[in-house]
Image 1 (cartoon, rainbow, N blue to C red):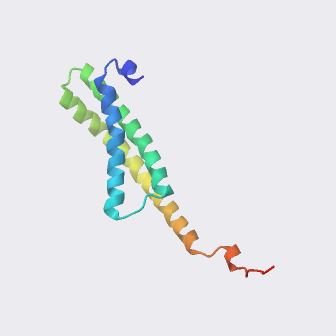
Image 2: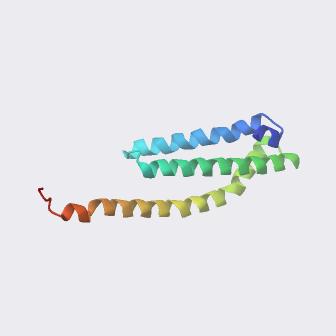
Image 3: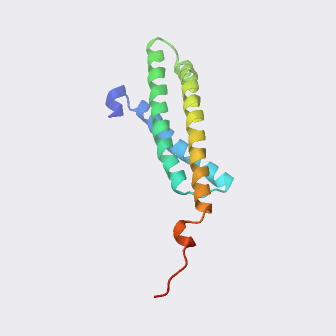
Length: 124
């Protein structure tokens, strides 16, 4: 489908390579920090796949527009990445604090005893 949209076989591969690289980076950071792959990490991976593919599509589209204006491949790629850098960073800086607060809340709930565990067991 992407090959039909871009009328090329090379451009969809650029987009498709962005997702495994993003996942590899996220898994590497989990290992580097010694964190486990829990539900929050997996939800983050799903979000990362969406963000990485969206950003890759937009960068490729901007680069293609610049190529049609007569710029070289390297110049078009660099300028498209520079144009998309600010929105990518704004999205990242907005998503990360929300995920961190959700993780902190979940850890706080896990430390509190549940109302059921406070009740004595009845033999019967």
